Length: 212
Image (tube, rainbow, N blue to C red; front, side, top):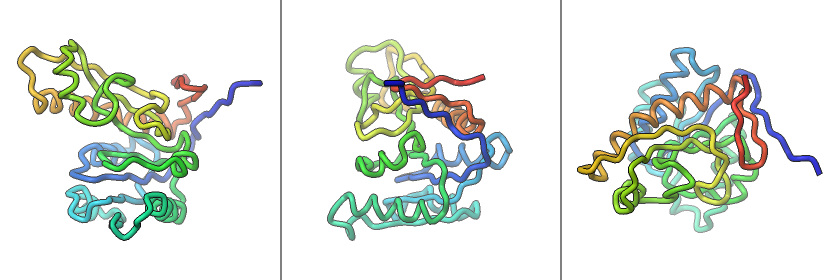
């Protein structure tokens, strides 16, 4: 049986960004859109938190925003199904998780397979999940960093698109390490989105190749 291959489309696309907080990676993606570095537009900024600072930033930038209260959806899949409904209505090509602090259900991941990205503040597959800077420091690793990957039903286990490394210094705290990693996140996330809409990401199994 031949291996399934996905190649990202070369097109002007529409992006939905999912956030839970300040949305600093969202603003970097939008900056790249406005500068013409990414051939796309942001069609929706969604949050599961009404007071997310990123929602106000999005409104100030003239972007459409939606907040949905998770408490109104006893079943998690119903909540994710409602997000999908809003995304479909807007003809979204790529979903970008930017500090979205909820795990997407398998149904969502299947529908947007290879069409949803996430940024994680560690060099996956090491230190998936939460509290990753604390884990890096406690384990005494010399290098940490960040990873842009496609979203999969298994948390932080989707195909890796881009990574950037930073040193872990002897006197680092969780806060100082996180700040150093965030600088690199702001570089590689817009770059991954740019490559996607240039049709340059080829996925074969777990491996992503950047096409010339």
